[in-house]
Image (cartoon, rainbow, N blue to C red; front, side):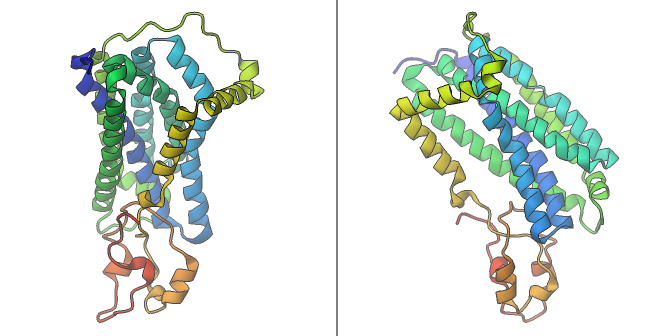
Length: 313
């Protein structure tokens, strides 16, 4: 097996991957938990779907320009500039302290844009860093680090969110954000560490100076059709995309329901089940009425509130 081309850059690169996923999940958890606390029913489902769309849509809409940037310029340079999440996290922290829920909600979209522009350079740099012979193992390591960052972000930010709200019951989104505002500084520190680490990964391979991007072709969807045709023509890449889609979209990664249930659900499993329970991260567990306010001696807990409230399906 060929040696690692840039061994000194390997650990900083993995830490960059970790912090990028950790920051994205951290802000998303704060927004989602706020929605879980204040809304229920169809309104909650709609707002949570909107949050997820703000994170995912940039990856779909920007993968052509993001791929162009990764090919045209040195990949570490692209990652360094895309680490502008530091500025975004400062704005997010400002929104938290000011109780500007609308602004914090909108900044979720900008974090998604940042990640979408960042990802092709990040994954393309793996080959430059470790070489072809180590590519499979390196991809596995990156995926493992990403999963650890996701689970760590979900757990830590949910725990801190509940800790900040212990004994407090804000009745509107702005007041709740002000209560959990110090969590924003954790996002800032992680983004700062991510940006500083981009200076430790070396210059990278010179990009293709002849690469050109035509906005008319992009807006008209010609780049999209060409890229999809290229993917379908390469069976290995196409199957890899399908495999990754199934892996990340698999229900096993859905957290079991733990959203607060109204007191009337107790002893009425049918009605509780008929309303359905949204899959959510480990959130609001310590303050969920279906645990804290359970009537003594109750044995018929709603099906969606059974232990464990999280885990793999």
